[in-house]
Length: 306
Image (tube, rainbow, N blue to C red; front, side, top):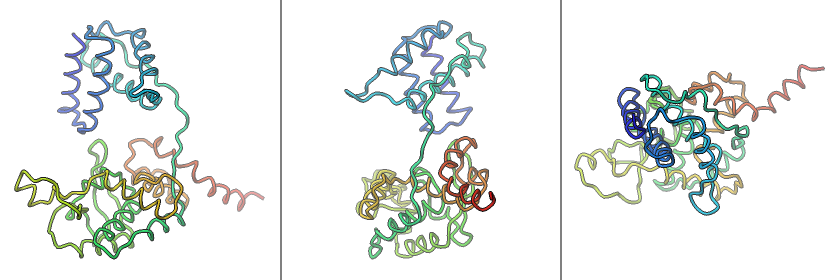
């Protein structure tokens, strides 16, 4: 079978049978198309370790712009997509290279940035809540820190989805997996203040109050989808708020997610519970936070080691 045809079958399989997210499908198609362009439309039985090695050398030397090479992490994403594709081919009994023979490049241990409590309070207080936009922005940062949501999960939320009475609700995360997240009393209060100041009746939890987008569908207008806040707008808001607060670290919505996880672990939460609250499929992903809690270990050592 030709490589192009096999890739098409694989992408259809991921979409229909595996129900992969649109983002995953786009990424797989991007990475595998690059592989196809590099080695041309050969028969999949001709894929071997020598060809894969040439491809990886190409990725390592590839520059999207002059001086901008692909990171090792991005190169590994290409390889992960290729291994997933080959695994599918083997499952179909199509003769090709066994995916287990391809190893990922070793990357340095991942480090994460987080904010300490004093920095978090400065971030919160830097927001002028005398306006509707300010109320919304304060609600967003409190919400992100309280729940540990990913930015994509936050953007997709609707008002009716969030149970403010119980202070908990379900969210659909990566891989379409559902999990329960919780709101602190403070975050609940800011969400209530923000929603009380609105009189639009739109579905999205967080709206763009400064301007509406072009509307082509009456149903979209009625639901307020044209006013749903974008991930980019939230990222820029968090970045500018951090600068206003005098925080020298690069602050993003994901840094608030890191801060949420770090605070839980420092205060004694077990790592399995944190894994569930973050929606991590693997405990290994959650373990990146453990090195940030060394101060807690030091306190335990000083208390019990005489």
